Length: 250
Ligand code: 13P
Image (tube, rainbow, N blue to C red; front, top):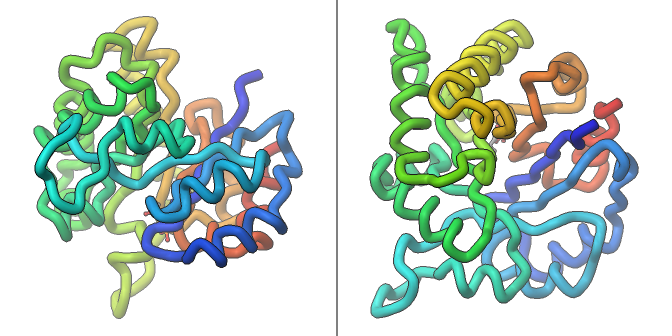
């Protein structure tokens, strides 16, 4: 049985001291069934890599360049050295707040693969795109462009995160999280698309879901074969709520 991937995305939360406190308290209670990954801020990675063994580490972004005069950027080689085995790319907060394009996301995927760091490639439609029936078109575009030039797509984890279901974009708006039916339907489409586009490799590619994941909702869809895991924002910030999510894996 392949393990479900339970990935925390801490976003811009947790100083070193706070990250350490989390690590001290945390235990992967389902380690036989769930692989736990924490995408921590850059400044927490080195500390976490020596402080604990109960989860693997991811970064939340990377430079597309190997090295050079790029003030403020962090390279894949730097991430590797501080113990990051995974890295999120193309998160909607970066696509929207930092105007990242599919071409930039694809360059970052390449930079990570060169250093043997597994990209966690995020994609998903906005509310307007969904309402106008464009979900599949958008997903197909973001996946094909993001994976352009990748030799073995099964070395990339795909994260379906419908923008409208992410807590970040719901401030002051009516809350809406994707239903079990929405998730099942879109994941089936993605798995089918991957198999058609990439054959065997596509069939081996993991696809996780993200967007307002909570233990209460997670238990309904984590069991589906097409859902290889979850990417969790807000509910990953406390050990208790994150552990509740991990415990939904059976
Ligand atoms: P929330 O779980 O807070 O909606 O965040 C989802 C997300 O963006 C994970 O990458």
